[in-house]
Length: 231
Picture (cartoon, helix red, strand yellow):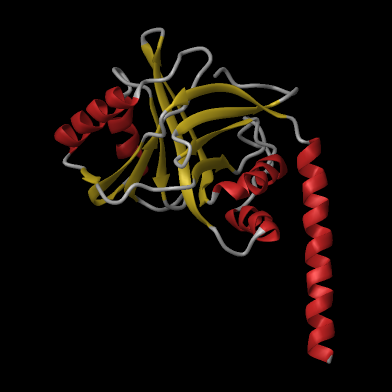
């Protein structure tokens, strides 16, 4: 009987927390501001653990002909062993199509010795979330564990979350604009998109990109109000 009471209490607490998060999600103002057909991603494996600065130089060079958006898998102080590339739809600069991305990835492989990882097509959604509030380097920094806890409130299953450096490089006005931030990569079932949005809101993320592998489309969500990045 005691175990049943404890189980029922836990279920009630979980239901109250879930309801609270649902109310929070309804108050969040994220709007789709750019989108593209298709859900292109490509994982590249490096031949050996490589310093982040060296990977940055490689990506910066590639960005002279192709806008790069990717996740350097691993924590901030770890060398890079895998890079997961995706597309970042932009209102200002547009979005490369999947065939252009395939060609750019092949070129990157040919000049670096990196290996394209092949396998069964993923399903669900792929989202990168930064852990710093806004764009100020000295702003509050959140943790992978906080994001994981947000997701757990909604569901104990159907998602995985790993550390990554979120990077982008784009050739604008004869120079490569580079951006990097510690973050997390979430792979989840589509039903957990509200949980991902709650995590983004909790980390005060201005914008994030959803690669919807099930629906085969990619879109950018941006928070209404506040300071926006160009995108």
